[in-house]
Image 1 (cartoon, rainbow, N blue to C red):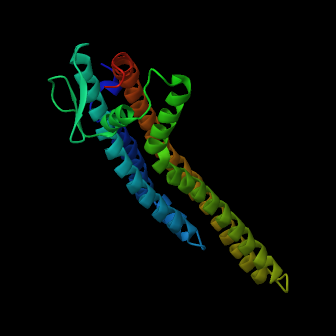
Image 2: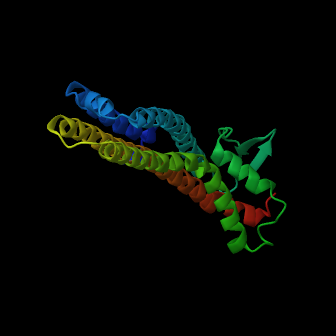
Amino acid sequence: MTLLDNRHYLLLVWLTTNGLIAFGVIVSWNEGLITQLVDGDRSRICLIIGLIYLLATLHCATRVLYLSSELNFASDVARIFGAAGPSDVISISHGRLTVGELELLPVCVATQHIIDLKNSHYELREIDQTTEKPNLIEALAEKLKGAHEVGWFIVDILLKLGLVGTIIGFILMLGSIANTTSLDVNTMQKVLHQMSSGMGTALFTTLAGLIGSILLGLQYLLLDKGADELLHRIVMVVELKIKPQLITKGGD
């Protein structure tokens, strides 16, 4: 049995990934690295990056729960069709899908895709399947992965916020030199302190943006892989079990 065969495998992988991330955060906190990061950022962009990251992680959590459940439902649908015989008729009753005398299929994306396929006003034996199939698959893929686009946008936003912090840090660093009127020892010490503070802002915000975008991108990559796996399972059921019966019986 592979990992993909386990129920809620996507949720387990996501929890494991975020558990490791949480462990790294706790270790960094105990070592004082996070405190140093926040205190060294005069622009407070690191706090904004952290807040956005937490909100996006909550969005990932909702999507993981959804996709994990749909993957389980898709496996149940495949199991039901696998147990069905060639004479079992696929029928729709009150918006629910049944296969012969077997149990009702669960209400899920896979079942709805099959219902949409049966309710199509085109007879599969009379249409060009090479043009119809990509349209159906593309629509299904857009439905499964469309919600992830905002996540990838946030990943890019975190990186851009880090770059904004870099610019602000350099402005603070160069501003301390521009306001210098004398070159005595006390003034130079003050200038060097301000320059180091500006450089710290630039480096810390860049670091926070890079780490946040990498870790959040990892989560949305996991979501995309889960959506691809769900799409694959649905397509396999449709191509191996649904299309042959619809073509043979004319979609009745």
